[in-house]
Length: 332
Image (cartoon, rainbow, N blue to C red; front, side, top):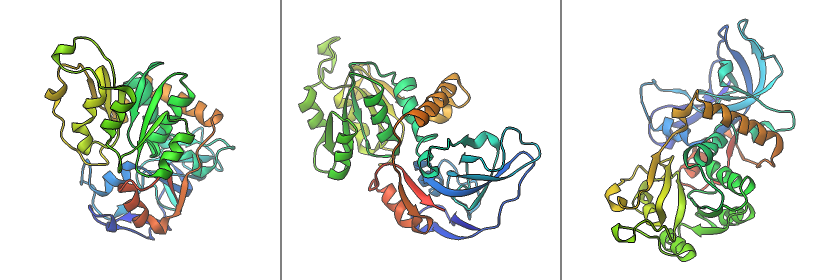
């Protein structure tokens, strides 16, 4: 069967497409004939051996796929041959994927197998960011980095569809992406390549109150910053976050950067370097699952960008460089 492989840890050129053996099926697993595989930042991390290089190479790449169940193990209940599903788990970029039922999400008939890949993982992160971590409230101001990415675009949609008076300034890297963000309701957009986002935010809402002498006043800036890029922005975001504001750091696409909290110690900013992994198995996770199901059933869904799996090297290189928009999907 066709599959994409990580042949060694490191450079994107270590990815390749070739033939793999069809996986065997344990009694408590189902076998899915996959049609599409979704690309997310965890795939870049896995290729680079983060958080661990313990798994011997080569191995089948990919952490999510969608398709149809073609075989069910004898110990499996509640899943049948012919069901359309999404699989969240390692080794997903292959024509056939064996998976435990806990890794499956049912796909409603009205949702394309390519569309569903945008939601169970990315939308969960966006949900946590807004409702569980930052607890965004009506009337607040929000700064959203990488707003045209897989998570960022969904976060923008939640903020503009589910809230009446949240004001969003969205950051992206091209005019095409900025127009997409305007179309999705962003109140302000900033091109990170041609504009100083700190200066632009302070133009929109005025200088923030900061330091010992300003007392409890908030004044300019934003109430919440969502940062999935890190890198140099870890030394600048605090300049636009109001006193007692919230700073959610959920990704490192621009590098890990360095964070010096002494620069804003008098501002009372809550810094949240969070990952959805820590919320697995909680009540918040259950509520997130319900939110995702309702969204998929009732909201207008995005159209992902589809590429043949043979283009995995070029596409993942562009994705890692921040040159893609929205959800990226491979045709398997």
